[in-house]
Image 1 (cartoon, helix red, strand yellow):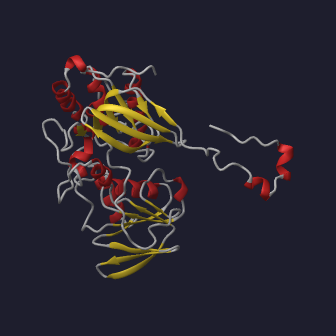
Image 2: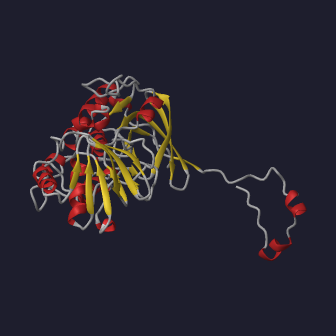
Length: 373
């Protein structure tokens, strides 16, 4: 790439006429393109399900690669700092690697450590911080272009694609005035300290909302919970539900059920309650109303979605979608019913996909001829 080098002492003497003399044919900086080795299976999504798919593919003799726009197990990393899983550690295991914890239920930090250990054990080829831009080609001849955080373009060539993109990146927005105030309104909860001695509204009635409300209250925030349902959702963790209900009963956390937030202002929120509109003094809002898969991305690849629940069309036995050579795995298989699939059952999708790969790719022709790189 050509560069125009100007001595520092000469920069002050440049005039508009001298600038005009610079040839228009000088090349401008363009995003670099980096060729990458060819693989049998390219997995999009480095969560537990994506990792399990790559592991099972490798065990079956296929060369795999994982790309993710975030870090390894990016969604888990963005969970609340002190979160404790609902399930026991053995139900989070992948790749036959034991997951041992000090207590009966693992926490976020233990899970992050476990999945790092699994990735290192299997020497998984994970390309972190690469955003998939395009997928072109067809079965046995896919081309995937990604861009990293420096806008360098990476081109991959793969026989099969596995989509394990999860759903935690896209929040279910309220679509109300004021929701776009980025310094006041949040769709993800991390930790309580910044909200000490402030008025906080938590919107939602499931686990995320219940745990955030309790954590905030215990660390000195004045918490109001707003939920459109008549009570806390039945799916709230069994040890969390009595805690949140007792705090509400004692008026330590104020709750408005059968209610919705109408608008968010700089110093208050307006809530529609059964007894009429209510203005609440407010500093921060956590709209913890759930998340959904990236349906537009799935459609852009050609994957058909069911009309009501937006489930991707796929063979339930192999998880191959209506696009030959493209598989779906993890929570995206459930479409909008994200509560149906968790790590506990999504981790087995890799075995189904690997079994079908063994049938569809001739063993003698596995693995592309490797590039010099």
